[in-house]
Length: 318
Ligand SMILES: Cc1cc2nc3c(=O)[nH]c(=O)nc-3n(C[C@H](O)[C@H](O)[C@H](O)COP(=O)(O)O)c2cc1C
Image 1 (spheres, rainbow, N blue to C red):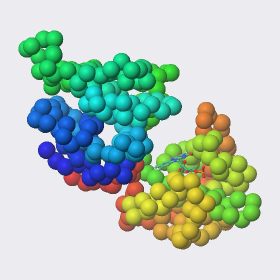
Image 2 (image 1 turned 180 degrees about the horizontal axis):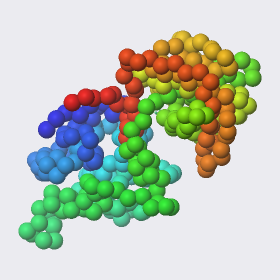
Image 3 (image 1 turned 90 degrees about the vertical axis):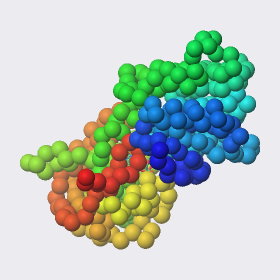
Image 4 (image 1 turned 45 degrees about the horizontal axis):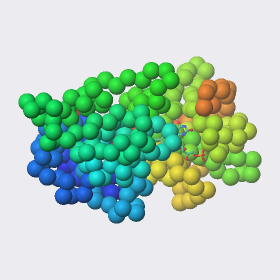
């Protein structure tokens, strides 16, 4: 068993098993980690699950803190909680949009009222003292339920089902990370983190990135008629974070220069491409900006910053 990173969603979380495996999140005060629960943790890890134990939380802050934790886990976890924590767990899970968990296992006697707000979420209520088949063990029941509701192997998205599964599927495509920039009409630099960059054509030299219609900078990019793509190296992860946060001060402390169009070229980037906007294609909730590359520069010695399954990664050569 190997230890997980200690902080997720701002909370100290204990972990067992391989962090690449699907997550089962245990929620309950420390005293719930009884010999039974310890046995289940062992069985879960052996069955290829990554088990996380949420810390005990003050009742007042629990829903917000748990929601932060659930949002920060890179794919929707299965939750295992005790019946007496269920009401608090339910209030963390009930938000608008797709559910933050793939399924829920409640140990003990869960009241119908407590599970009612979780309509649509697969729930197993397990009372280890009253298993219907005496030959069955609680861990076997838990594992069978998980295999059905949160399979270890392939997950499926079907048109119209929840967008989180589609996002998780798309997150299997590892990308680099870029900061896309332009200069607005007032001469102010504009930029945001984007991993939707792709090369399109060598002759003519075309590249693209996709910009969410919800971007506060959409109109600026449409009006500018030029942009730059800055591919980040491994040391520029803080910059990726800064350009993904909503803040007017993204360029504070950032060294940049301009070439022909005025679009900010971030100094020291792994590669930069200056482009004239060639075409803007409307595509669902994004606009595809295709740019004709007018200048490019790259740094041959550094490693790229990577993004995979919702997390930053680095190149690893075995
Ligand atoms: C790794 C990563 C990749 C992202 N890729 C894109 C992208 O390709 N297109 C996009 O519109 N937003 C993307 N975002 C989100 C934007 O960076 C983020 O929403 C930003 O705050 C938008 O700011 P704005 O509204 O000022 O444009 C990405 C965020 C991260 C962390």
